[in-house]
Image (cartoon, rainbow, N blue to C red):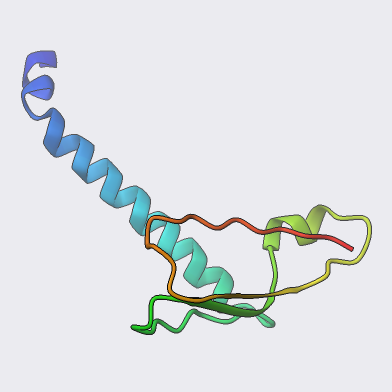
Length: 88
């Protein structure tokens, strides 16, 4: 049986990766449906604009009030990963 699994390694790897992406998207969709959250709107101009950005995990653990952030990035390479969490 281990040899059968190793023969199909790429297939299993791809299935697991796709399930992880699906899990992430479903989790984001569930949070976006909560009051005070919004789903993203995709546009073709290559930028990101976020108004009143919040972080659901950071909000829950902070002692002080969470300060939402506005972010505007225009025409950036798609390879950038942005993770912004700020508190007052």
